[in-house]
Length: 97
Image: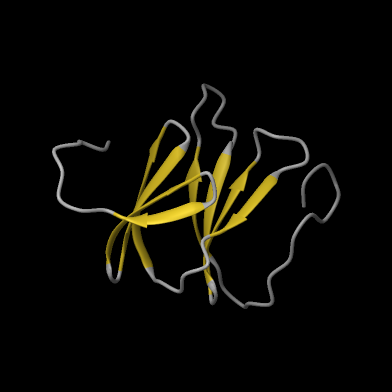
């Protein structure tokens, strides 16, 4: 629910989610949800919220928020999700916090 309205639904009993609370009052600004079809990114900074599906089935283990991108460790390695595009990461010197 967002503003007392349903904006998206999943038919699942349990969902794992990773929240980005990037401001002082701990409001969730973005959320990555693990679904049966793969990760889905919700960006609540936009109205209506932006919903982006990764299009790849994977189990997410860890998530790092960097600017507008999401870096996640999945069962098949590390991935970057930005602008609706999922890219497998190669070895780099970039440090994610």
